Length: 259
Image 1: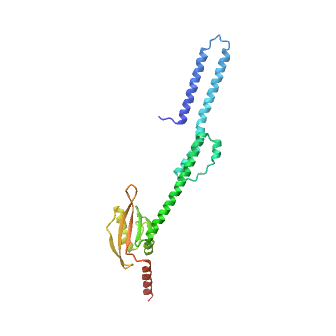
Image 2: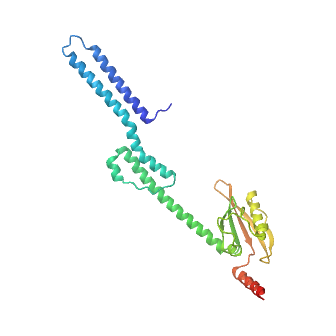
Image 3: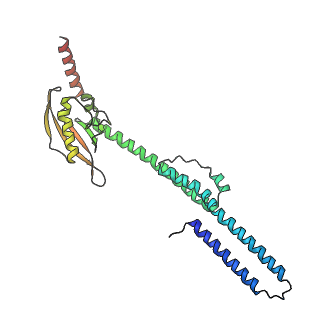
């Protein structure tokens, strides 16, 4: 059984006390009866033995309290780090005055580590936002409509062209669990689900969309993580009407309805 640090220190102190008491007993046995200062020497040994025992008990009781106090802040810092909390504000000067220098050195290193982690986390977030905006810009500049899904079918990205034509395709919307009009259900949703369930790209499809009065080509690709597992899919829609073309069609349809 592995003993804790406190338990090891306790046993060391107990062992030292036992050796000291045994030594005193041996000395008491070896004192000759005709020794002039026998009583004084015996009283001195009894008093020192008592003081050693009391001191040993105090030290044994103090060790857990000292260690608990010393490790409380260290434990709290590690706990905050495990929960992703990096805004740790500690008065190191105050700790330096009240904390043992060995434990203060540990806290000082932890604080420096927290600052480094917080800086790295901030840089990571900035990079993620930068890449997100870059991907969004590329998709918006593309001539096709793009729908990027995660492994459960939630929409991660959708470019403006596709969003203008199919407004229900909002980010974070689940294309699997949501209900759409029959045109989307029978074409885009059905095709997207087949890609997600199979975990592989599907042959392109050329489907007619009555509302657009056009045939739209659907293509697919899968997204893999660093381990090679499928973690999402990309659905591309080609031959979509451009914004100007769509506006003209909507205006023409509105005029026909008015007439």
